[in-house]
Image 1 (cartoon, rainbow, N blue to C red):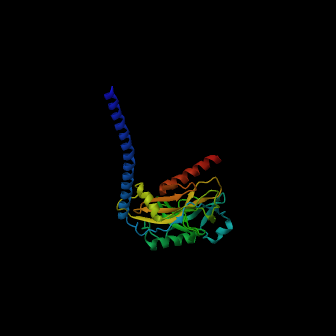
Image 2: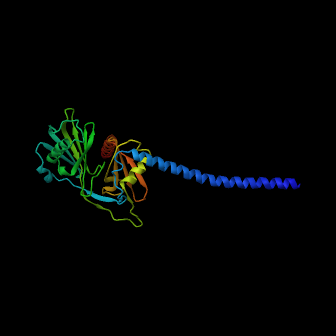
Image 3: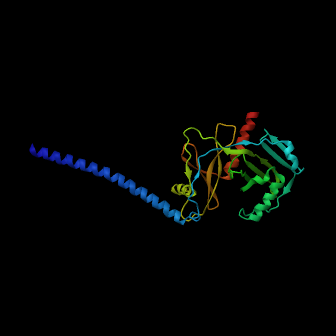
Length: 288
C-alpha cells in the first residue's frame, strides 16, 4: 500500500513537471519564430534596391480627404479647339469626340521614363483638355491612355472622379477621351474618437516585405499620394497612401483608414478599366 502511494506521488510530480516544461517551451518557440521572421524581413530589405534611400519621416496616413465633383459647362469648353464634339453626362463627366482622329506628338509605344516623351504627351493634353495641366500620365492599357489628376495636396490614383482616359485607334491617333475633375480638395473633419496615426515610407515597405510582396533583389519606388475610398456620400473621398512600385511593373498602395488597420491594395490598369466598363453597363441597364 505504501509503495502505491509513493508511485502515485512520483507520477503526479512528473506530470506537473511536464506541464511546466510545456508552458515554458511554447513562448520560447514563439519568440524564436518572431525573431527569425524579423531577421528574414531585415535580410530581404538589405538587398532591395531603393530601400535605403527611403525616408524615416512619419506622415499622417489615416486622415481622410474629401472633394467635390466639378460640373462641366459648355461655356468653359469654348477655349478648346473647335474640332471636338462634347457630351456632358450628368454634368460631372465629359465625353469628347474628335471629328477626325488626331495624331499624338509622340510615337507610341514609348518609354514612360523618357521625359521628352512625357512632355510631348502633356503638351497634347494641355491643348485639347480642360485643365489639362492638372493631369499626370500614368500608363497605357490597350487602346486607353490613363491620366490621373494632381491636386494642390498631391497626386490622386485610380479614381474615377479625377480621371482622364484618352482612347487611341490602331494608328495611335486619338479618337476621343473621357474626363472627370475634382475641386475643393481638403481634409475631412475628424470624427469623435478618431486617432490620427503616422507612418513612414520605410514602415510601408516593411509591411509589404513581411507579406512577401517584395522579395530579395527587387527594385522599388515609393511616392505618397491619395487613394479613393468608398463612402456613403455623394462627395469623392480619399485617404493618403504610399504608392509602392515593384520592379516597375506591380503597383501596391499602403493606406490607413479610420479603423487604424493598415490596408495593402494592389491595382492594375486592366482591372480598373474593366470596373469602369462594368459600372457603365450597370448604369445603362438601370436607365432602360
